[in-house]
Length: 121
Image (cartoon, rainbow, N blue to C red; front, side, top):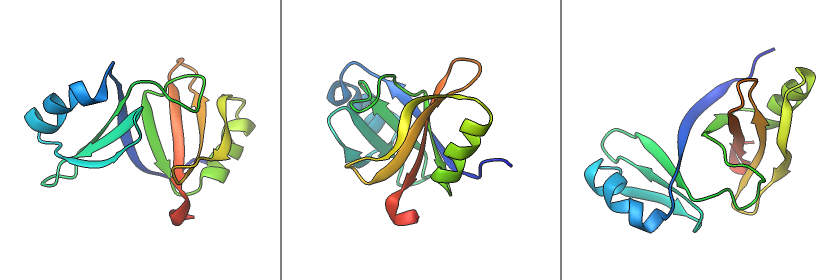
């Protein structure tokens, strides 16, 4: 079995989201702020739909992911990661901001945030 990926969004580590906003939202044209939780914010281009998440640190997990991978079935993705023996860095759970997610370490060491919005379940 393989996981069905719906979208991948880069999680770019920054020291200060508000200080970084001008470059990413202004210069790169990612002017639509989809959400801002203080520690993570997503900026999108209204013209192209390109997206980028700026992250100071993951406030709910022990490590920061390099990408967010949206899937069509996060529970099945979690089961498959366990079956394959991958390290689960953050357990599968519902987060207060409306997603169900877990963090998994790829064999190369990268940490991925695997997520599904609760309204998409």
